Length: 488
Image (cartoon, rainbow, N blue to C red; front, side, top):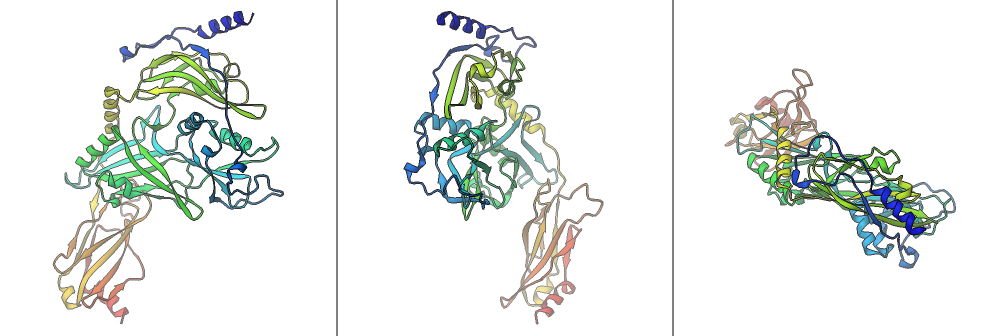
């Protein structure tokens, strides 16, 4: 009787309607008309041991009374490698989930509050708009100067159900009861800094030509901007195509800074690979599965974590391999998720392999990135001093400090730059601005202040910043003498 039931179930799972629609462009990648599930693998119990045996320095996870959280404590860190005994399962968590399984921090005061970090930040990919990467040329600059702005949108990859899975792992590890409260929070991005030196080292770029708009929350997307010349642009795009561009975001955890990797590569991105699976996992089946990536993908399994009798279990069901070309759809008719993975599913995902060796796909992505090229008008700030003031007023040099949000084509945070004038080089045009087009005819472009260095080595600085709406500043005795007189 059991054998008959299994045969009927297999026949039911292997039946599906044929795919209709346009013929796929990648004919060599013809896939089966339907996705079919092979024999089920056995359920794998997740082997979890109690951290009490590991001599971890943690506060009581069940506090006797409510305690107000004070933020993550870098000295109270939990490494899931010390809790999960199955190396294969730990690797699965590292690859699939959006948080770093080796860095889970307990709160400084509330023992039942834990914090997690993203495992890395990747280039954003959207099924409609494509990669969050754009190249913008400035036609007012000369060929060998930094005339290109490359902007990358970055985000942490994640799956729905990541955090419930982590919560269940910790609850099981600490032996908590169902009624015991355990809170998980993402560490704030406030106070984070970028390791610009690491990013610049691989590109031979000065760090000042790399800027990062930091997120207030690490679940948010944020922006990395590189100022390049045309040759450097080609080098960067080639590196993103091959091994990728790497760096790190230094996130504050208490008094410490913990690096979170940044990886900008076309074949490793933050975003869904398929459309239709998440709907099925949420009991909203569409009956079809679509490849929403720019690369062919091979579908090989359906995986999930469930909670059974208070214990976490991993279930993997093998699919008959099917390869989908970019944009291709296939029939995806399976029983409800409860019949395939069971009840109390915390996390479900589709096992896929992305074809990173598709040369034509990479060329198409490169063309799409370059389609966003546009001209962004920029202008140099001309700073000039009368040569005679250096000798007449006994000055060694004049430093002009400039701060503005318009050092890049897209307004960003206010940054500072400094220019230098001497008797021999009394003009300077090193500072480049991108005047905004939506702030009226004469927008406030920057603030500046002078710093004088006398022939005797004394330093005199203006106490206040002055507004400027002009792209040219001229300094003579009228502007400089009041600063000298005020210092006497």
